[in-house]
Amino acid sequence: MKIYDISMKIHPKMAVYKNRDEKRPKFTIQSDFNTGSSYETRLDINLHTGTHIDAPLHMIKEGEFLDSYPLERFITLCKVFDFRGLSKISANDLQKKKIEVGDFILLKTDNSESEEFDFNFTFLEESGAKYLRDLGISGVGIDALGIERNQADHITHKTLLGEGIIILEGLRLGKVSEGNYYLIALPLKIEGVEAGPTRAVLIDEI
Amino acid sequence: MKIYDISMKIHPKMAVYKNRDEKRPKFTIQSDFNTGSSYETRLDINLHTGTHIDAPLHMIKEGEFLDSYPLERFITLCKVFDFRGLSKISANDLQKKKIEVGDFILLKTDNSESEEFDFNFTFLEESGAKYLRDLGISGVGIDALGIERNQADHITHKTLLGEGIIILEGLRLGKVSEGNYYLIALPLKIEGVEAGPTRAVLIDEI
Image (cartoon, rainbow over all chains, first blue to last red; front, side):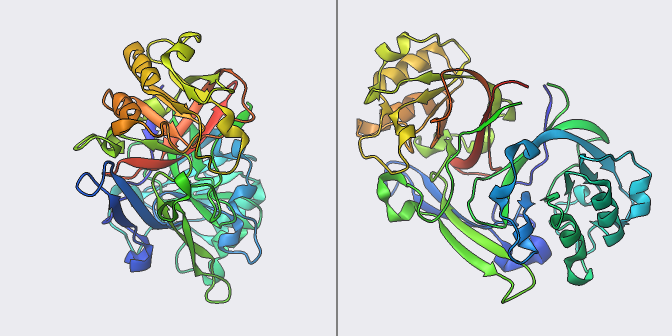
């Protein structure tokens, strides 16, 4: 069994969306061996920092919570597609790949090559989101902290989340080649929220 | 594929260790549809709240961080043993079960029957920890927020963590019977810390 860790490291200086302070994780040591007999840390984190899954409520008023997704959807066959060299991914780009109903796909882009936040990150454009929705995929992941940027009304998010398509953001795909894998991307079991931090891995044989 | 979710739900009123306020998760809504165009939550959580993995640094000065464990150890065959009816689990109790070198074992106790924190929770006693260490197991999970209570010098933790044996705490095993499963218990990828919140599941066939 070969496991690829496709998650971001969570640490105080990690890249966060648009370098915004309110997205940075904060660590507090609650106890250490000077103050007590054990070491305990507290982590204060925006649910969209690092590798995470978005649920409909993130962009849709009264949308479903994270805990509405059955676990089976987070442990699944998946297809990684290589879209390096593009600044955005459109329906036209996706049509060149073999994507089928029910697929969980991951979009590998130039974003995986940098550890910094890139204001011009590659994203899934509106036409691409609509193409995937019409195909009836189960989920889509990308190696950026957002699946879109600078589009009116968060149209990519809403197109996908409106159909219950899972969005997995903040992946690191630099060491993964285009191909078929098993994906395990189980979010923390948080009740009544719009997203969940996730440790995501790919497995290339079981 | 049948998946058992063996994780605790994370929410403001969940059970926390000894009902301590500093262990409670805090949720802050950073944006909603009244204040912005998306819904975003921040979660402030002690790394030992809910289902989580302990690394050596939790109890051992200058012990290894969570990120020292290879991922292969978190995706593994595992054995669930039923110890309901006991107030603590000793070497004598463990000897009655078939536990072998390299095993990852989960201890099901009466703890799984309550959603409240029980100050008399069933735990793994010093003799049991030493027995498992001498057997050379890989990991041990329990359906309590601590693997021990009221023992001098955290001896159960130190016995296990001193040998790099993974401790998985805060499981919910009420719906799982004694037997063999696949365990997936991947902690968040947090750098330089002593523990990690984890979504843990069992699978009974692949």
